[in-house]
Length: 341
Image 1 (cartoon, rainbow, N blue to C red):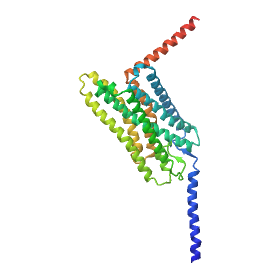
Image 2 (cartoon, rainbow, N blue to C red):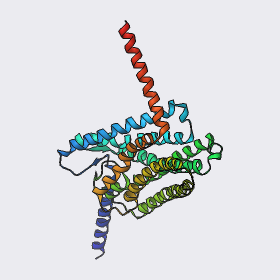
Image 3 (cartoon, rainbow, N blue to C red):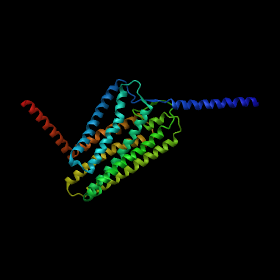
Image 4 (cartoon, rainbow, N blue to C red):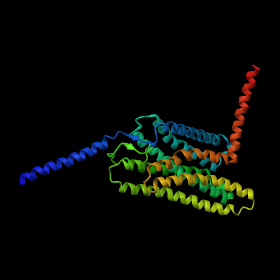
């Protein structure tokens, strides 16, 4: 009997050790992932590629154009346009983290992304999307001061404070990104290499992990809460005061101008936070619907921001008209000189 026990125990310990080695091996062997993307017929990939290409081209044109206009026109050297320029910068970069790789994968058979590439993509995406959330809250506070306390606006929204608010937004984005990325990639990925999404994101990576996710989900929920709730609270309180102040404006033209400025901001906030809430707060039960929701804040919001803020903004339209007028004047001058020669 003792001989039998002494024989079984080493065998059992060897099996447990082998299982542990396999799990470690599976984790260490993950050098790349497969981005499944959209589960559609192959012939629709061309249509999706063209759609992504069109939207991304509009993002580049709109946000780079907005940054150039704000930097070149002295009249736009105000806190509102300083924040708007940073918003365009953030939109430009976090869409660039997602869109090019997604477009490449429409033509790629392997659809692979390296482990380092996946880490980088998640890190940069979280950095810029969290920064955008804080920037939108800062812009709501800026509008609150401008409309509710116009006489004190230049004093309260000093250059020093504006720089601090923007720097703080990037700092919060960086801290959130470091925590989320490090927490996600300490998980063991031994279930599969196929990420059911078109970019590396936390929830799709959770689905292919064989680690215990309870603590991970609790920490992720806590991070989402301390990012989403304070920013939404600042935006909501700011706009409650703004609406109450606007309703007291005697002139119809004044009310119309104030509501025009604020409604565009609220539209962007609603699209962004609605999609993010669906993606990260509501239980993960609809992977395909989550991909559609992701499009709202990865591509739709960066495309709409410059359009909304330029088409509904008199100062930006005048600055754009001035730049285009100077370009046309220069072009006509060159043509006239060539004709004379």
